[in-house]
Length: 299
Image (cartoon, rainbow, N blue to C red; front, top):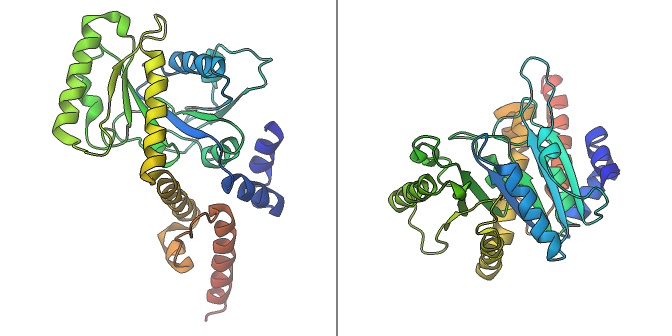
């Protein structure tokens, strides 16, 4: 896995890398869980607890931890990896830290490629975003199940539930439940916000009080994640959602590199059922290069 990550980082456009990503994309095994929330909410501590329980169940886990980067130097501490308490000899767990660099939205540029690789090998792929506010919602474009964490006693919890962030979670976790009354109040605030803006008959977003230290509701969190995975499979939403995510990634990648005009020149970027976005990206790049070459001759 480490060598595969090095390959997609150093030679992302090589035929060997594209073939590797194609093979991984067409053979998904695991369920992708995204964890997001404001800084200091306890995402890394929660991750450690969930990973431990998944490993006790015998499930393999791949982790992508995204850290913020310095605007001045471009460097990152990658401290999320250091916070995880895991056995370095555990062959059923792989952790990869990534720096967000200049990528906005809470993820890193390689998150999608890394997720696809891990999804083909691990039972659970866990992605932790950088600390987010009210509009960084990129996690919904890579995860099957999104956990949104809220910390009690940090001000008005409704501030974290404004349009944008409120639309993405499938499960909401009020962390540090051992704080007592403030945690209960935060849960009440969140439930009220959900009742005002999110009325879905298909999947009702649960709000759980959790404590990583006291281990409150951790087992219920795992059960709820499994319930959402079962819902996605039973309703046929999983494959459709993943295809939409792949198309959105493809368009965003080309738009970031060539702008909106470049995307327009390429034309239709929709994917067929099960079609890899990485192969389609290479085809689109060839179309774009041919088009610009023709335009360069004044034609």
